[in-house]
Amino acid sequence: MPSLPSDNHVHTEWSWDAPGVASMARSCEQAIADGIPAVAFTDHLDFTAWTAGDLIGETRLDPRRYERMRPLDVPGYLAAVRQCRERYPGLRILTGVEIGEAHLFGASAAAVVAGSGFDRVLGSLHAVPFGGRLTAADRLYRHMPAAEVMRRYFAELIRLVEGSDLFEVLAHPDFPRRMWPRDAPRYDEGALEAEYRAVLGALARTGRVLEVNTKTPLASVRLLRWWRDAGGTAVSFGSDAHEPWRVGDKFKLAVDVVEAAGFRPGRGRFDFWRL
Image (cartoon, rainbow, N blue to C red):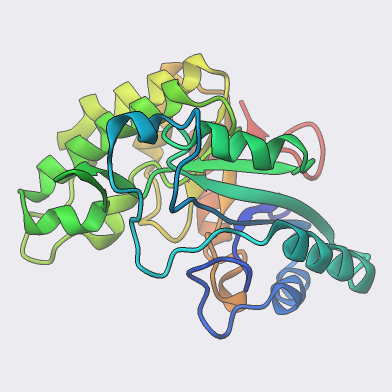
């Protein structure tokens, strides 16, 4: 039985969407209790305004996806990480961010990432252009069939992968699946195989890493084999925890799925899992 992998996608009170119970310190304690060897605190790096060089400025899209969205206080976040490293020396604590829509906010994100020294940088897509604004992907279910929402999402995800080199790991690659409408036909990865394969191929060509996100309905062995077919060689485990108790959630099951697809622990204890 292999040891559990690092949790490379954890949010804390420094994320704009964090609930009241969010706590970097308690997330560290949960990781230690669960035998997670390392955590990467990848709080949200999102932008509600654009600067020169951001593609969104050329598209004239309204950039505010969510009303509560606010910029990340990077100095405050990094100070909190330093405190936790001193308090929990037996836990490997990595710095990081989850950049939202990095292809549209490239200059803004690059200015933050360039001088940060972050250990983990995730790229994610939560919103797509619709109706003259960046629209939260789940809100599209009000306007079109569920399968069409996913196809739009995957098409924009390819633009993210091909339009930004700021991130190393692609987070939750089928994000809208979390909010799949109850009145829609059952979600079927196979019905969207071509779209999945197009995304995975684009990501593999860049040599980057696919996240196995345990908050999203867990990726199937079949999907991870599509990743292998596309040329993908590495996966990252991420709980996407916003509450401390979810750090490392479902990791034992995720390990079983990843192993069944042929991936194994990498070169070191804190490495990604690889072929």
